Amino acid sequence: MLFADQHLFDVADVKIVERIANIRGEKLTFIRSFGMFWSLRRLRKRPVLLLGMLFLVLLSCYVPSRVLFVEVQGNVTVPSKLIAQQAQNCGIYFGASRKSVRSEQVKNRLLSQIPQLQWAGVNTSGCVAVITVRERNKEPLPKETPAVSSVVASRDGMIAE
Image 1: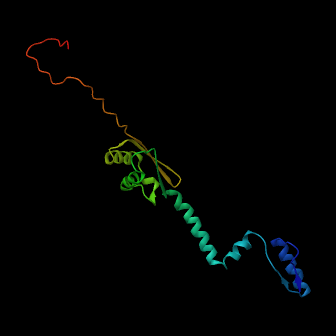
Image 2: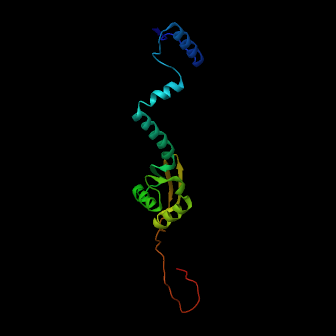
Image 3: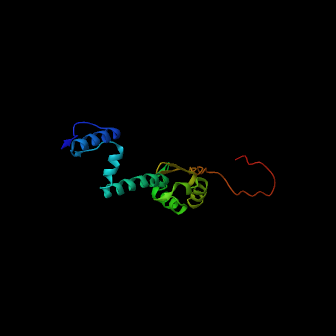
């Protein structure tokens, strides 16, 4: 019996060695075969591994096209949770398609639903949808000055004191 455990053979070499072994009346036994073909052939014996690899490939194609996280930036007084809830009504939620997110439509709906916002924008980067907002500035009320008001005169004139 001839063992080829310490030598690497090419496919053409294997046929020559088999012929020589047959002429001598010996049996040729391979302990292990190397190469891509033999490695893939051995994978047939591991169906769970193949299914796992197939699942990962499909998942890597599916995940980048989805929104998995929503961030809110730029808010001070309006709660992030409120903005995220309104954005969810506009179509930005966990698992939503990135292609279906229309920034202009979301901006218009957010501004109409939350009057405290002056500006809003939506950007998607990878699996993250970032909602950037700017709040309206509350203009301070003018100081009350002790002035005379609602004066009615019977003639035109000038008030000196």
